[in-house]
Image (cartoon, rainbow, N blue to C red; front, top):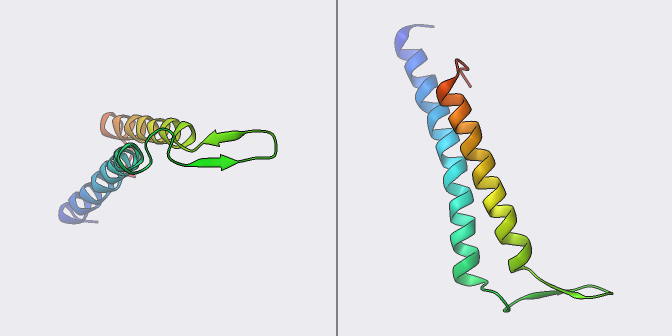
Amino acid sequence: MDAAGDKLIRIDAWLFHLLNVLVGIAVLVTTVLYKPLGTVSLNLFVAQIDLFYILVPLAVLYTCWSGAVLWRWVNGNDLL
């Protein structure tokens, strides 16, 4: 592949990793704005669990994981 093709692949991979990080941030912000603490509960047989306590840690974990993958990709020699 020529230099222009390599550059396009690199830009595509950069956008892929960046959008993954932004999706995690968007889920976190959406959870805080639209499902604040105490508004929606999941009724289990034993107890009720507020969805806020499930969604926020998962969103933070996904954002951190995507950020770490982006950081490793930027500092490494991986193409994808």
